[in-house]
Image 1 (cartoon, rainbow, N blue to C red):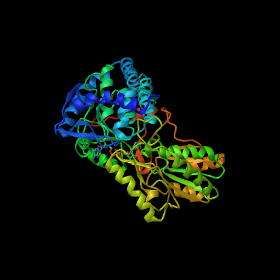
Image 2: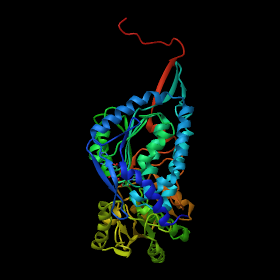
Image 3: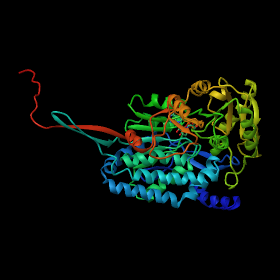
Image 4: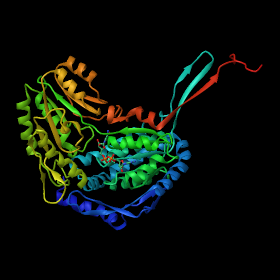
Length: 502
Ligand code: NAD
């Protein structure tokens, strides 16, 4: 495994061209500067400027939407086998440049190489998986009635907008863009302003793989300008959005006048419930992994630990010991487990909860401090002696911060688990099968794992309920979003047609 110094040297080689040209918008297969000039992207590792980025606005979105609109018919009508080949070539291209993607992602977002090298490869898997669904994506049903042969078919909805956040941006973008392209849609992608690097790599890889110009367009810029314009654009038929719950509401409002279809993947305050009959060693590993991996900047993170009071003291003691040993450091150091938080704004938000916890009467049992002398680093943090009414139990902190809350009965655990605005994931640890069935049946969440951490399997549905979102990704669910159902009824004979005005 390369050392930190070797990784930095490789990264410098990859960044050289960004430093020279900046990141331009990519519209209709060509580079374009932003209509409002540029903004800068910085690294949270040492706060230095990485490069200038095209500052796109409604003007750039309009050009990209026009390109996506013009490219749509040919992409939709391209034989499925040919589209499949291109998607597979994109997967190959991602694999070939996985190291570059991972290094750039780490430098841009503060994520650690340990996790981002896998995330880059998962981006390739997303393309490979949806490439294999292309052939049957448009298949429909035959629903015969007494007078009609009813046939359904699915058609791609048209040009779509994809708006992505800064947490694992490459992987999340492929999660949206791969099924959209497989369905036959064209795409305008607006990546998060805090993490533009890998979106640029993706569009380059796609074009090198043979994706026709205009099928994938990338416009950089801010949410209230470029993002808003994308939602409002009449040529864009749907918005696939990943981000905060508050922004999700804005997405819906902005798209109302043009009747946008929206898919919203939003925030979470996900519970992990540990009963005293569980395999506590495995539960401990999973609890730690699901909040402290990926810097805790993860929508599915289990940020509320509901722990049975009979095992609370022992479990929390082991937790504290392990949390204090987690290695915070440079994201390109292969030993690092937690890197810096993505931006100053986010660092300020996460660290503000250290005082909020104390003011609310909780105990800061581990962490609760910033660390390092240059970037936005924090120690992994554990709050104990908390209850479910506190802000640290209700608000999405989106950092390596866990709130531990005791319960005594299953009923109490369920009531607290569901007493939240959110409903993305839930994790249940028990060896009582009936309880696991009963509990998962009543838990308000889009995705639940029993005796497991979150293990993504692409054919399964991904998404949340309540303030965590609307709609599902994965398998055929993705195609339901990017495609329209169409019914065609063929008369099978001369059935009676009601006659008027005779
Ligand atoms: P954010 O909502 O601030 O931004 C996400 C994207 O939306 C960015 O590209 C931003 O520019 C854009 N945007 C902002 N305002 C907009 C507007 N008015 N119109 C159109 N676009 C706009 O989110 P973030 O801080 O970048 O990401 C973190 C959030 O994402 C967390 O809440 C996290 O839980 C959530 N998330 C959810 C999932 C999921 O699958 N449910 C996955 C990853 C992240």
